[in-house]
Image 1 (cartoon, rainbow, N blue to C red):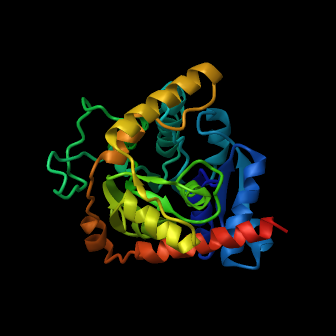
Image 2: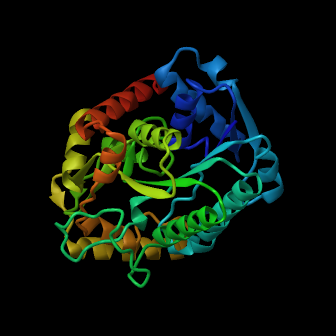
Image 3: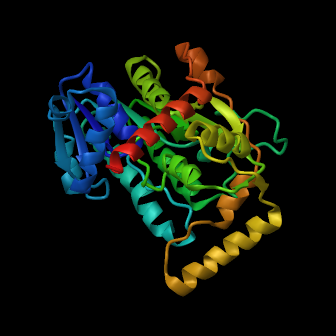
Amino acid sequence: MILVTGGTGLVGSHLLFKVLQTNDKVKAIYRREQKLELVKKVFSYYTKDVASMYNRIEWLEADITDVPALTEAFKDVDYVYHCAAFVSFEPDKYKQLRKINIEGTANVVNLCISNQIKKLCYVSSIATIGHHRDAQHAITEDTFWNQDDDNSIYAITKYGAETEVWRGTQEGVDAVIVNPGIIIGPGFWNSGGSSSLIKKVYQGMPYYTTGVTAYVDVIDVVEAMLQLMQSDIKNERFIVISENLSFKDFLHQTATALNVKPASKKASNFILALGWRLDWLRHVITGKRRRLSKHMTKSARSISNYDASKLKSALNFQFKPMTTSIQETAKQYLEDLNRSSY
């Protein structure tokens, strides 16, 4: 029996679709019933037989911070894919990030230990991988992550979650960790996550930044997870990225695929610094959620080149080109947009 946490998210929903093609016994947990419709929507991109596939999932209402409910979900489970997480770069969300990402992962790991789970796959992030002073130097799984750096609260809590997974490996749980870059894929246009980038570009983004980071297609993330879980590889982490792209190139490719005007103005350091301060002031006055933080502007300016050679070598893995991924995802967004207009 397979258990998927975070089954109603971008990675989790795509993972469920792939798992159902070769497994009959699948459990998934959810927190809000309305998000189950997003899973059906994702399934509809790849099959007409949505209902029969969806109904094969044993859904359980549970939260990774709710130990009694989570304990029930672990019954008769052999393999666990831990995709559940909270993504935010808002400083005032630190306690919530710790509770979900670190404490929640600790709960999952503890139940893996007590239930003698055969293998655990944890979805982390490249945010927990270190950086070099030389921006052109390739970042690998062995690059040192300095806890004393000015890391984002999201990175800190995901790093803490990884520490819990490593603790589990010391207590008898075989595990693999995947560290994907920015994940591109369809279905979650309003989530505030990576898929919402497509919607934002369509609606108009006049400014671009000079930073560089890594991107990957959601199907590649899922395939890497499945292959690692089916392999003899254990207690290893893997960077899962297709390409390193500048934000300018990504925005231009996405705008072209969406047939909208690409960003043409460079956001200077002054504009970015002013932007996050004004956003903070707006948050203080109105109480609305932050849309731009200091760490987000720092990331937008930084140049980080990640290397996925370890995964490619271990699994002979081939990634989908990001041009293809962007085009496919943009096409799906436009089709969804057209359907919603009727």
